[in-house]
Amino acid sequence: MAQHASGVRFGMSDLLAGVTASAVVLPKAMAYATVAGLPVATGLYTAFVPVLLYALLGSSRVLSVSSTSTLAILTATQLAAVVPDGDPGRLFTVTATLTLLVGAILLLAAALRLGFVASFISLPVLVGFRSGIGLVIILDQLPKVFGIHIQKDNFFMDLFHLIQALPETSWLTLAVALATLAILVVMERRFPHSPAPLLGVGAGIALVWGWGLNEAGVSIIGTIPVGLPGLTMPDLALVLQLLPGATGIALMSFTETIAAGRAFVQKGEPDIAPNRELAATGLANLGGAFFGSMPAGGGTSQTAVIRSVGGKSQWASVVTAAMALATMVFLAPLLSWLPHATLAVVVIVYSVGLIQPEEFRRIGRIRMMELRWAAIACLGVLLFGTLQGIVVAILVSLLGLASQTAQPRVYVIGRKPGADVLRPLSGQHPGDETIPGLLIVRPEGRLFFINAQYVASQVRQLIESEAPRVVVLDMSRVQDVEYSALIMLMEKEQRVRAAGIDFWLAGLNPGVLENVRRSGLAQQLGEGRLLFNTRAAIRQYQQQYPLPDDRADRD
Image 1 (cartoon, rainbow, N blue to C red):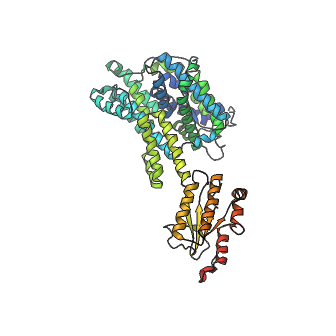
Image 2: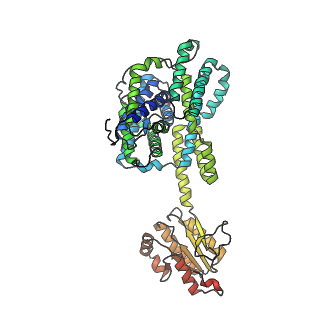
Image 3: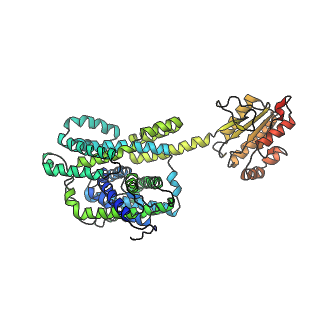
């Protein structure tokens, strides 16, 4: 057994996993190449060079890096914008430049240690974005299933054009597509993670070759170059034109890579290292750019196959790359009989999973606001396109973060009857009591210029409605107080004092306490108004304003 760089030896389990994964990866890679508007050979090249480079450099033991449905449709959008006439020679050059840029951006991000960007898009927004991508991909492939051609515009116009063109359906093409669909669905349901795509592709080739369906109008792939990919040189004059799209593709490549890598880490294995993943996927794309590859990233389904059949190391991906090489050298003539309808069905079946209605329902059960974010991200893709959809997704995430930051929770704190338990007043605990004349208010999060006025407004409304003797601002859930918020607190204290109400601070962490002292707020408050915690504030209040009944004895 050979020794891999990760320290895991190559064994029969990795050999089996690599061979099995190749039966899934290679047909899907060819299918995704057609999604991008590229020859199927590009898919094989993407399943060779990037897979091999990531296997040598990545931090995940089993992650498989090649083309994915999301990256394919993003690539398609960029290529269509730059090469609208689909000129083959121009397509190869633009693809090489785009892939090179994606790799360079990922490497730059690794050098700047921007691994945290993996969490830049919130999960609900990512769910919406992927669902929109899934709908776009499926609609994009449906004309090939029906054997028709439509004018491409935007999602809703394409749907309208598809419905209009349905009477022109090629029934033989549809029959081939349905046969492929039946094989994929039955195999995936009865034998999850089986080489269903390989069987579907094999069946499509057999139908066309055996019955001569290509002569009856069923469109096939046609000639595929035999042998190793040739050297393709990028055109640096295209850099500025491709840079915005490449940035979006790089972001999604890294996001998918990290998500897939983390999903398959098992107990005892090292954690995924985000910055190393940036470097590994960057070099995988950089190397692939010169050998006909399209942009690549980590794929969930092929990685799941590797895990399900016992793969333990990146040797499985090395085997997959070797199978891609063997396919290019020996099987290219056979693949020329592959019908476009079969590849379209492969794309559709493995893109349906991007659409997650149950995840939308789950988000809605927890937070309606985040459900709206997911819906906006989905509509952004459908209305404005895939690359613009990334911008919409990021903006929605940032707006969502800004709305949460600008309006932090501000609670009134009460006490559980008969117990030393302080908690926010809520409808779940209607019996919780407050101390007459004492208003305890607890803001949460960082207080700074964006939310200082909002918090001040909330506190003012509570004071006006409660008319307390003393207001205690419980700062135990505040991690930091910025200059603007400190000025707000000083102004609030002056207004409250002018109204004859005492203003106290309690539960300040060391950093916040230091800022309060430096700002002069501590001197303004004076002795006895900075309390260790809320319980200390309650005791001090009860000593200064004793109650006439036995509640005064509770602390």
